[in-house]
Length: 172
Image (cartoon, rainbow, N blue to C red):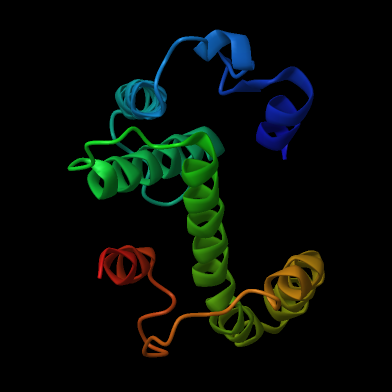
């Protein structure tokens, strides 16, 4: 969790400053566009440095940058026709809801991941695979408990495991 450490303790996101005074005098839209731009730059750098070969094991920084880009773009699309500027409190509430929805979509896939892990055909690999699945479940238990207080939208079970479906749901 190096990324969380960097955000919480160094007030940086992927080596970019996050202190409030770094954004002094900027509107929330300008800040969102800045994050989108930085995320896009980061994704381009990573893809170029790996010649686009990321399908099996993308770096955590690429996942973080891609997530930031998609989140900021979604928010910018939602508020693009607003005449009034977005209040920081409104933006934070929307962002908090989006992050909770993303977590919900990710955690919806846990049963599928655990089932897949436990059905390893080679006995030698199955034991290790089951251990990994159990650790995954253990690590997510506390987060799931916190998320139980949030209302999960009514979506088809088949769609809940896909972030694009959640994004589509949020637009409706």
